[in-house]
Length: 512
Ligand code: NAD
Image 1 (cartoon, rainbow, N blue to C red):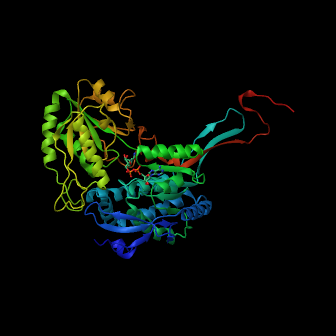
Image 2 (cartoon, rainbow, N blue to C red):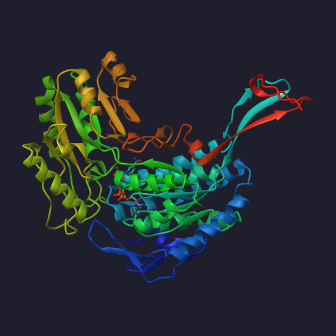
Image 3 (tube, rainbow, N blue to C red):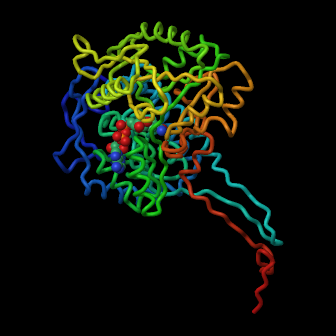
């Protein structure tokens, strides 16, 4: 593999070791401790990245604090212009970065490119947002008084990201945080440090050409411990953490303990309801993409299929036929639908779930299995499978980050909605129906309890324009579009008296 930016900007010959701490244009390391990045595609070691020490971390935070003093005074539309230039850089490096995402993380090349396109899209969105950081004005109950609110930057924003969207999730947070006047410290997944370094390199010219101070865009690398530093650090105003519910619980508690703000984007257990009124020609491809895309390693992956009993046999037949057409292999090759899981631990998690399904009495419509032999040497490739299951089984209640789809029959729509809501997570949901009453019931206050509810499209593949996130154990955070920008700012209510008297609110009198 030769990536253009690897040769020109990020010189990463195979097995080289790169510093993983950065305040923007400067990169350094002060320890010999490294993270090894292995590609799940072929099992090769693609790079070593030096991890950040606590001293490195403190230097980053202090630099970010100084940068914030300057950055918060840059007019928001000017900050937007800088984000626009970053978007241009990502356009220029889309192919290279998309390939690296595929190679380091294992998702198919179209999905790797799609992830970079998401960065470009959120840059465009953030540029527009930079001129729309609106506050309201209110009528005061006191004469000659004016009330309004304004939004100010928060300060330092820590971004902890997961392996499965190694670059897009960072950009959802960082691009908005930057136009809002914050500075960012990114702690990427220890499973995908190279893509993070690449992003930091890609925006380096923009930081340099605009004479921005060190510290606007920071990177710290390492495992859970480095994430914990961010979570516990009172200097970090907001911690936006994406990952497992277990991680979110720990981060949420640590940030709450110090009265900081957190934005949590955690696990999902997403279902599609297939009604007897569904157009199955639409539903089947949506289900299969939702269940096997990114090898079942999306937070929005379709994990449960709640199917009306009258069409269950037909849906089983169609799924078996669709799954038979899937090509599993090197995600960088054309025509491959399913790449590898991230590592062998993930394969063990898949195998454990399969064993548990069997032990619970489940049977398979599409058989599971791990793949070996030529092309599968990394040991990370598994067969997407479909199991007949019951919603209340513990294995169905938890998120297994692998391409396992549970088939659950229903009789009435009320029952289907209650099954759909009957899990601890609340991220994404969908119904396939051409019946207006069913669709509206699903979307009503008594319908899906998820942050995302779709009709006649699947659970995965959200656009950046809407607010993204989920309820219950998914954490309650919202990122990306709509008014998600507000999470990165503090609201200030201002009352201004232009009169000559001092009337008090609620008619209270106070005389001296
Ligand atoms: P993970 O929880 O293992 O790790 C995520 C990040 O958190 C990593 O950077 C890790 O180093 C860090 N971390 C782990 N424990 C920590 C702690 N105690 N304190 C601070 N930081 C800590 O998750 P993963 O395996 O990388 O990703 C898969 C999970 O992410 C799935 O559950 C998936 O649903 C979820 N996810 C959710 C969304 C969403 O938007 N809701 C998006 C992508 C992924």
